[in-house]
Amino acid sequence: MPKRLIIKLIAGKEDPERLSGALNVATTALASGIDISLWLTSESSWLALPGRAEEIALPGSADIASLLQEIIESGSVTLCTQCAARRDIKEEDCIDGISIKGSTSFVEEIMDDNATTLIY
Image (cartoon, rainbow, N blue to C red; front, side):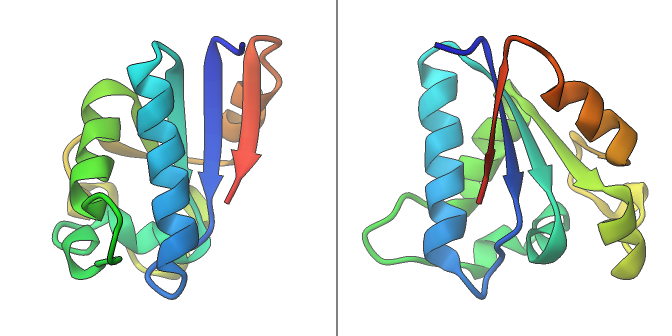
């Protein structure tokens, strides 16, 4: 079992099932003692802004905003630099605990021998 799980989330409110699946996998891994790094890219970038996760509901699924908050509190959440720039999102606009980093940081994380990467 990996000691670190890196999840690159591409889907946003246009695909709530994939979004929910990624967040559920992340929180399940956290509960299992696995270190989680969640990367928000493409349309999931909007989740970095306050109130955006609360706008997404998926019947039969755990609350999206609660799942995201759990990952922020117990893992790490990073917003892609280029994705943020394309959406005019600055770090001070983000939910506390979400940082903005570039591709170099992502590559460093995924190259760790103790890491497994998933893309949703």
